[in-house]
Length: 69
Image 1 (cartoon, one colour):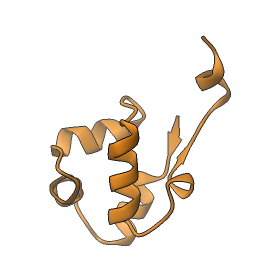
Image 2 (tube, one colour):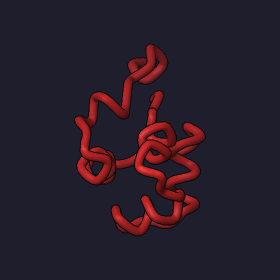
Image 3 (cartoon, rainbow, N blue to C red):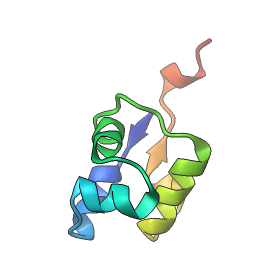
Image 4 (cartoon, one colour):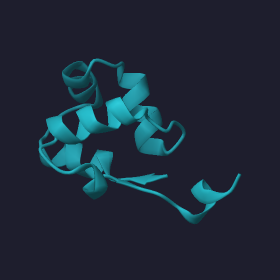
């Protein structure tokens, strides 16, 4: 899954730690999401979008490989 978490976080001038605090996860979790190493749960993805004041589909995008079994 592609994401634009880092871009949107930087637009708010927040650190990874600050975004993590606002959504209730660690800085390491935000880092892993931004690097594409961790796909957040639906609830966490919705929280991130809400805190960043945007729609979930503006931040997260499925890749072709996400459709493979």
